Length: 130
Image (spheres, rainbow, N blue to C red):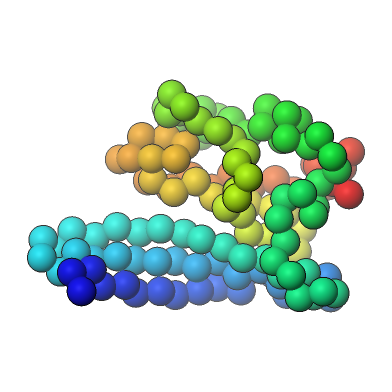
């Protein structure tokens, strides 16, 4: 009970194929007053009701192509030493015409730089999309 949570959400896409929800989670340490903000997302396949994962959207072997396209430094931020651009449970959300990869504090850049959101238009990913 030392931490309070405030969760809000935005529906970022809602069409005949999928619905995507971006959650903003604000944590407050009740003892120190320190606050942190995280983002998490879920995208649902409306045909079967299951949560979409990258393997559902991309062709086999997509990891290396997509990893090389994700460049934190292009945003003028220093990249952490052990940066994995794509992980098994990659955090992302979708809009009707794009996919946005989410890296919370310390995952892609220095903790002080905050969250990093890396967007791609779906048309730019033709060739590795299913």
